[in-house]
Image (cartoon, rainbow, N blue to C red; front, top):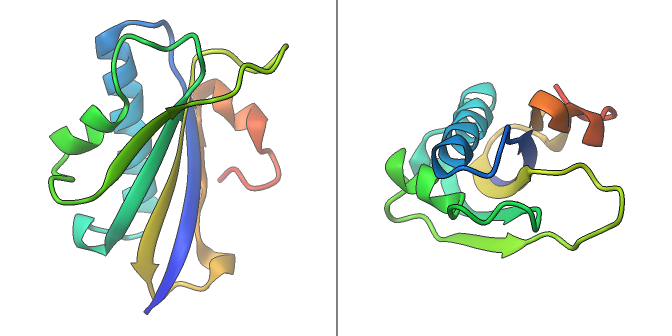
Length: 120
């Protein structure tokens, strides 16, 4: 099996704890489903949030989904003027037999505008 990285992002409606958890849950579920993964396939996940999202750690959503023994990390995105607001991003490192060309990166809600070239 190879190690692959999967990217994803979701725009959150507002900086409210439940909305951050809901959007992150949707993102993680979509990444897992579209790439036919289970938590045993996941090596680690790095989450970032734009500076305007401070109500909750996005990684908590993954913990609630069963990522109990997967290393998770949260960090802040850099504050670039004019950047899309209220975005949670992830980069998951996974073990999979899929070649890089078959990995499905997931960009949801307004975050689709971030990577029109690879958004599924």
